[in-house]
Image 1: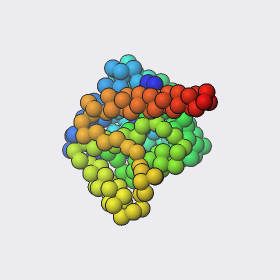
Image 2: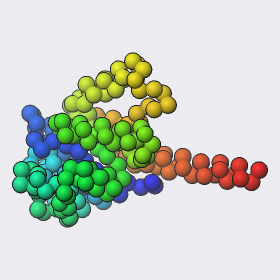
Image 3: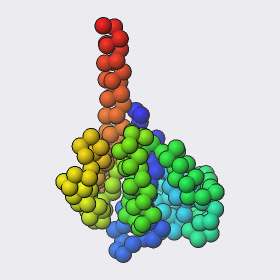
Image 4: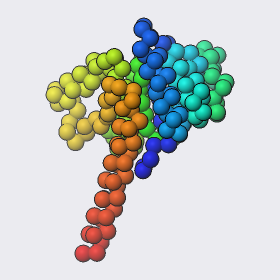
Amino acid sequence: MAKIESICVYCGSASGKGPHYAEAAERLGTLMAEASIELVYGGGSVGLMGTVARAVIAGGGRVTGIIPQFLEAKELAERSVTELIVTADMHERKRTMFERADAFVALPGGIGTLEELVEMMTWAQLGRHEKPVLIANIGNFWEPLVDLLGHMTEAGFIRKEYAVDYLVADRVEDIVPMLAEAAAATSRAALDETADTGDLARL
């Protein structure tokens, strides 16, 4: 993956307490639109989900919303998106979001956001994908999770050979550059591996 063209953003269907969460979501959407990066998200119009989607749309960017049928009314599906995909269930929703995205970002959110983030981290840990996963630690929101992951490692439950590979950004402005660098590094590593394989084949 040489370039990030789409980012799946996981975030809350609530706006949280304090304006800084919504401000971060809006800023991320604006920056994604400026970078011509498509937003892939849960399809809702409420909370941080709606905020980031409308910011991308306002900036002239492309937005793909993916929402299961049973949540279409509950989360008030955002109808102004470029493409709205209604899935049969949560499993199809998450699979489609994964397939449509080059990278994953977790803004603050609740249990659903946590579950989606951890699933992508688990898939990466098991070698099912090499797409960058980034925790947007706005106002230190995700600090307890970062500490827990460190504790799991120290306690021997995340072994070195199965280290969880993820990024942490404290500033919204760092998110897109960090993902771009991670994608470029993955591409460089793949090229180096291909070159090494070719050298061995010639021996």
